[in-house]
Each structure stands twice: as C-alpha cells, then as structure tokens.
Length: 472
Image (cartoon, rainbow, N blue to C red; front, side, top):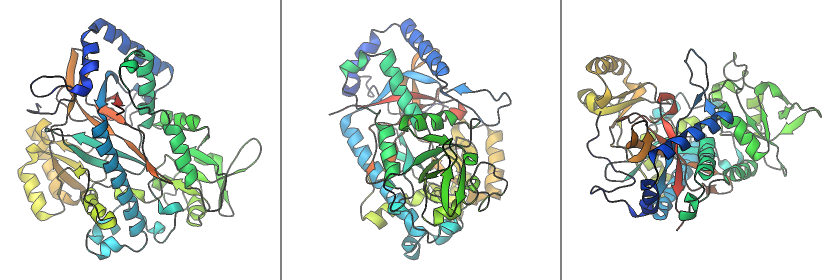
C-alpha cells in the first residue's frame, strides 16, 4: 500500500528541513550509516541485557521479543505540544465526567446526547458500579490517548485507552537510551524531560486514596511474569518504590485489603492494577480467575481501597463510544473540542453500514472491543479475498464494528535495514488525573517499520522512538 501524500515530520513538501529539526538534520547528515548501525546494535544489546522485552500472545515459541527501537527521534515544537497538551487535558476531564455520570445520574443519557443503549448494553459497562462513589469522582487516573497526524499536518485522536494503558515504560527507557547513546545531542536541544513521570504517577495514586487515609500504601498489581507487559509492571513498581504484587499476595478481611509481608499483613490503600476487570475478583466476575483477590469488589464498593483505573472505566474507551467524545466535551465542559476525532462510521447504523460495505477497499474497519491491531481490516492493504471474507463477518455482526477513512499518517525518518527512510508513526501521551490533570511533555511514539504499513502496534511488528518535545 502506498500513501500518496503524508505529512513528513522532518521536511516540508519542497524537501526543506522544518525549523525544529534543523540542528538534528545537520547532525544526522554528518553521521555515517555504519556509526548509526553500531549505535542501534548497542541499543538492542542493552535492552536485552536489561530485560526490556514483551511477549506476544499466541506465539508457539513463547519467547520474549524486543520492541524494535529506532534511534532517530520524533521532535515536536513547543507551540504544537502546548495545543496538544491542552486538548488532552480537556478530553480526559470530559471522559472522567462521563464515567462518573453514567454510574450515577446519567444526565447525558437523559438528555439524549448519547443513545442510552450504546452505554447500558455495552460489554464494558459494569452494573456493579452503579451508584458507587470513588475518590475525587475520578475513574481513569492513567489514560493513554493515541494521537495521529494526517496529510496536512493536523492532529486527530485515534482512540482513548482507559482500562490498563501500557507503554509508558518504553517512553522512559527510550529517553534513557538516547541520552546514553548520543549525550552530545542533548546539548544542541532543550528537550523537555520525562523522567519525573514515576514521581507524578505515585503522587497521582496517593492523591486518590480512600477518604481519611493520610499515608496511603500503594501497590502495583500484575497478572504475573508471563504477562506480555510484565517488564512494565515491575519497572513502574521499582521506579515508584512500591511493592509489585499478584492476586495471591493479597486478601480481604473486614472489607479491607491486605498484602502478605514477612512482617505480617499490611493494609493496601491504592492498587494500580494491570489486570482486566473480569479477572479482579472471582467472587464478582469470572469465577475461574486465579489472578484476582476474592472479596476485592466488596472492599472497593465500601470505599476502603482505590483501584486505578476504576472498574467499569472501559465503557468510555470502547470504540463504539469514541464517536461521542466531542459531544461529552460540549455537554460537561461547555467547550468545543481542541482535538478532533477521526470521522467514524458506526456499522450498527443501517446507512453507515451501507456506506462501509460499498467502500471496504478504502476504509479501516475495527472491532469495537478490539485492541493491539487485531480483528481489523485495512482496506487498501487487503486482498480481494480478505475483503470478501471480512464483508461476511461485517454483515453478520455489524454492531461489533466501526469504520474510518484510511488516514495518511505522518511519517518520520527512521533507520531501517535499507538506510534512512520515512515510516508512519503515531503518539501515545499519558495523562494523569488526581489532584490535577497533568502529563509529562512527550509520550510513546510508535512506528510502523514495514514500508507503507500503517499498523504501529508492537504485536504487529511495530517499533518505538524517543519523543522530543522542545522547550520554548
């Protein structure tokens, strides 16, 4: 698949280097490719040594993989980041207000601004959360918002990740790696730091502790070492200086959560959980779960423990709810959205389905509950046979899908096997909601390493880059 026109992050349409890349482009032009290859090999070796890997579910080998790291950074000028950050804070505020509303008064549904059946019949809507009050009325304490840049350089929100968003450890490790490999580069640029994220995260988690807890105990809850993101779980626990625990390490007594320690039981006040809702409590959700803590929901509903993110937050990041986020911003904040959605067809609507079926070869079709680049059709990159097979699935279950135009994602110079070439990218900034809504300048830039590919997910062969936000 060839995208005819896309925004190049480093150069304009005439091939001129953009001002914010000028110093880096000059440095890069003087750097021999053999030297770049040597640095890339050094980065791979260091990532392997430090165990910075991930596992892909379904692979027979069960081996850990490196997420490919590209040594050419993505650079964002200060004025662009200022607008992005304002739009991200606005969006996450509205999403939190929406989640609180639908589990309480449901004003936005009563006003007819979002169809009630879209929310109340959603697989991610949790009836057990109806009427439950949570600390500060905040549900999504950690949000990863995927941003893409289209052909004319305009930014769009591709999706919101509010359940257990991952990738922030790679943002931090990528920066460490770049500073280790190319320390002199950072004297040419005033790059905004990202290393305070763990402190910001811990402060955010402590700020949403249950009422009356002055010195909360925070833990990171992991499914275990076989989880694909286990490195990140262990990394964040270590960086925050808190315990990494599994479900079997905790128990509930008198509606309070405790973890087992060598000094005896210790009360737990805030759980940064990296486990899906269904596996958190076998007494409330999946009875076959061995990952959760029996009685956890009861302690949570009693207000004795905080879960980050809250149970039921996923209803707001479901792809069938995504088209309504601009309306949430208008309804709750009385503001126009700073960041725009990608135009979206909801296949459950008869007229939208008809359009999608007529233009399957031009569109990207996604499962509303899908993630990781799975369960989707990229029309321009698909064969006639693949499109025909997907059409049958879509006709059988239209309510399970949305469709969007195939955006000409922006591209950034990337060091690949053939040399330096443009590859398509996206950006996942991480927004923290506690006493305030804040984010470090930058995020995880993901890159589609295959030529022409628009799928940046690591599980689909994508890599990552360091993201430099320039200080004004």
